[in-house]
Length: 72
Image (cartoon, rainbow, N blue to C red; front, side, top):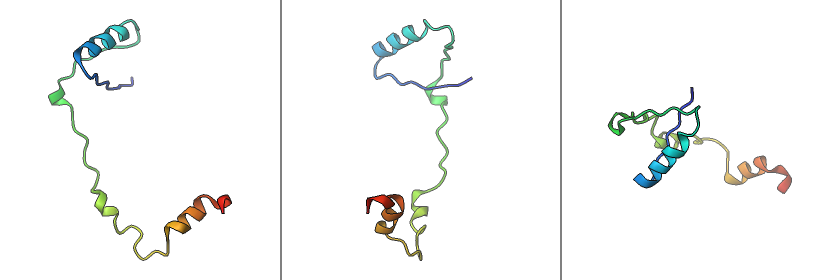
């Protein structure tokens, strides 16, 4: 089974969407308490990538040349 989360911008649109989706027999609804929705785990701090290219002979121009060699 696959799950998706849909957020409506107001109650009226939520009711409309739910009534529309209930017409399909392959969709099942679950009531979820928003307080119990888990927050995504932090994988890492983006600042950890700051030194990724340190001591490498690479420039933006070289990256562009390798990405689009026929444009030169």
